[in-house]
Each structure stands twice: as structure tokens, then as C-alpha cells.
Length: 399
Picture 1: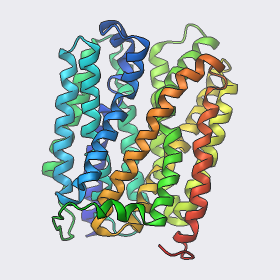
Picture 2: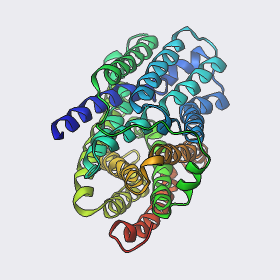
Picture 3: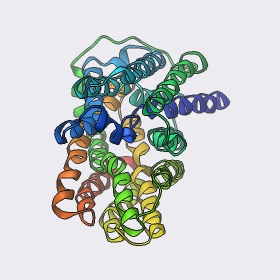
């Protein structure tokens, strides 16, 4: 059983890594798309927000109808990854911003069937001590999300369509892995009829909602940081040394978001199973919030100083992410855990749309030196929520 669980984790993590390459597949080639699609300031903002917007739509639909609890989770993941690969690949035939943004939104919809579903699958394979398992899964998500930056390092001189094709092909492999290589967990599957009571049970569960509030604060910071840190690094590095190569900046972005974040997820998962989810999340958000406050002071300074702080931020900003999902999967009843996870992520990604679009507006007013300070609001709110969650985790509260 234990061997089967870790084998399932390995395959699911690989599938998650490949599928999530779709998330930023268009963002890393935004300069090319800006010229090809004649993007205005408004349409460029929509391009940045298109995938999280689609994810919210997909998550709303999924949680409303309880998709993750009514159908086989593994098959939902595989079909969603396949559709994501198809819709993302269709970008190579588009030369208009409206259709391009529409395809990105639809791609986001499909990813709502990948990420929360993968967490639900793992919660079935790991009924206990799932912090490390979900931490490894989120590490794969982090690496996958940053993978387009890594692709750009090697394909910077190649047509932008190759980047899109590579990411779509990886998502196709993801679908194949989950459909044929991943087994269903040895737990009974009962197809459940749709009921509004599923959502009511989620919102009425106090420890689940406290974990959700912590996640919402976490998400205010996370995707805005992932989206705009590469732009910050570009501006900071070129300000310090104008001859800095685009390839080095892409590599720095991959190291800060992907590698550092992946390590943070695994370490965070191990620590959470030892010291508790609430303590780990509070520690992580304290470090990430502090990094958001400090990194602006490195703007235009030594490249290595900026990169080190960026990697600390990249490690801490995601190291707690798995624990919010793990907390929900532990405190939500089996009958609605899939709906609870999808609801959590739906609201969380809705929040990211606001923070992602807020950054470029504030940057024009306060500059790169101060713009990330606003992201520290999320960790502060999250810390307060998880401090209250602690009493339920350690048995002093009632669910």
C-alpha cells in the first residue's frame, strides 16, 4: 500500500508539472504577442488575468455542480489536461487579441480540473501525513508554472509558436500519464448527486473556512509575485547592468520561482507534518511578507543581492501553499472534500486577478522600489487566520 501511494504520487506530480506549464506559456512570450496581436494596455492586462479568470470560472462551475465529488477524479484530471493542451495549442493559429485572450481563458477553465483534482486524488492515497505528499505536488505545480521561463532560456531565438507547442505537448503527456499510469486509490467511489448542501457544508465548517481565509491571504501575494517578479528582475538587473542578457534574466526567474519554490514546497511539507500546518504557514507567511516589504530596497543594486532575496521570497511564498489544501482535506468530510478544495481555489484565484492587475497600476505611481509592499497585506491577513486555526489543529476547538 505504501509503495503504491508513493508510486501514485510520483506519477501525479509528473503530470501536474507538465500540465501546469500551460499557465504562463503565453505570459513569457508577451513581448512577441504584444506586437503580433497589437495589444493595448487594456488587452495586455486581460492577457495577464486571462488564465486565472478562466480558472475561477472553471472552479465555480466545478464546485457548484460538485464535479470533483460526482465523477472519477483521475478521469476528470486527464480530460481537463487534454482539453488544456488542445486550446493552448490553438494559439499558434490566432493573430487577434480577442481570440487569443478567449483561448487563454478557456485554458484556465481546463486547469480548474487539474490542480484541485490532483489534491483530491492525493488526499485519497494519503489519508494521514499528507503534508509532504501535497507539498511535493505543489512543488511540481511550481516547477511546471515556471517551466516556460526555462524553455525560453533555450528557445529565446526560436519562433514563439515553438514555446506554445512545447507546453501543449507537455500537457498532452500529462493527460496520458494520469489516464494510463495512475491507478485509482483503494477507497470506495460513490457517485454523488448534486446538492446545494455540499457548498453549505463547506462554508459552515469553521476550521475549513479559517484554512480558506489563510489561503486567500496567501493567494493575494503568490500569483502577483509570480507574474511580476520577472519584470522586476528585468528592470532591476538592466538598471544595474544594461548589458544583462535576456537569457540570464529568464534563468534567474526560473531559479527564483521554480527551483526555490520547489525546494520550499518539499521542505514546507516535511516541516508541517512535524510542527503542524498552522505553525508552518505562519512562519512561511512571515518570511514571504517580509520579503515583499524588503525586495524593493534591492532595486538597481547588486544582481546577486536581488537574486538571493528573490529566491528567499520564491521559496517562502509557496512553501505553505500545500498546507491550506491539506488542512481542508483533513477537516472537510469525505463526501464534500473535492467541492471544498475547488471552492477554496476558486475564491483564491479570484483574489489573484485583483492583485495581479493592481501591481502595474501601482508601479507607475510608486515605482518598482515600493510596489510589492501592497502584497504583504495578504500574509498579514493569512497569519491572523491560521493563528486561530491552530486551536482546531491541536484539538482545542470544535469543528
